Image (cartoon, rainbow, N blue to C red; front, side, top):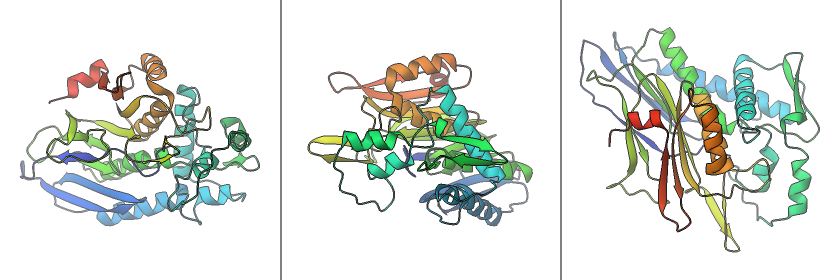
Amino acid sequence: MKNAFCLFALILCACSNSDNRILVTNSGKTQGTYYHIKYLSPSGKSFQIQIDSLLTEIDSSVSIYKPYSIISKLNAGQEIITDKIFNLVYFDALHVGENTKGYFDCTVSPLVKYWGFYKNDTNEINVDSVAIQAIMKKVGKDKMFWKDSTVVLTEGVKLDFNAIAQGTSVDLIAKLLEEKEILNYLIEVGGELKAKGINADGNVWRVGIDKPSEEIDFKERFQFILDLKDKALATSGNYRKFYVKDGVKYAHTINPKTGFPAQNRLLSVTVVTNECSLADAYATAFMAMGLKNTKQIIRTLDDELEVYIVYTDKNGDWRMYISPEMKKRIVN
């Protein structure tokens, strides 16, 4: 599970003005991370106030860190009618869960808490298989259902949209800008991206994705650089958010099939598709399921998804799996 964490994607674009369109830049804090938005505005008008208002609305719907949010109230056992934002995230989560055979599961919250990956969580982890199996009884899509415009959770079940909410935020900001007739933009929230049109130089937006290393090497930072036009991108990785206990490395992506942090050779997964919410969720699911299962899923969704996967072979050396359409985007 990705908890406000992802590979950092650096926005690479020029800042000159062309065609009398003015480059506007907005940035700020949201969802435990930062957002950076660049767009060409014919009038030079900034929409930062509207963007911040939208992000506050998203938090009020799906942030588990806001006690007044819809998701927090549902997790506390309250009966509450959900809103459009919650419904969008919920049904996207179900869609990806179905397509990944349950490897994306928004009911993993009790497992994330057990393994100590929530914000400010300092639990001393004592790995107990019996306790984990007991928690697993509260995990799974069969533990929740839709009824009368809301979600009903069975006792002890708690939702967590952290692995899809940032992607959804990107999509909703894009929708807001397009409603304002802004058709050239690059939006980034916590490393999740969506681009449309061109930058201020009249070129396709270009982005760089970090190498999956525990430390950032600013001299040789990027694993790859790609052109991104009219698509969304999300990256998930296990190489910076983890801890080691008794010689065992526990990374933050939880495998909902086992209840344990994912144990596989994947270092990072980058997904490109139309909607950032889906890219976000698929990247998390693929990190949980490993390379073999991911390749099988991709074959069934090859018209929808492009992927770049970094993994280690049996000798610990880095290897890459790149889908054909993704190869066409890479410029370095």
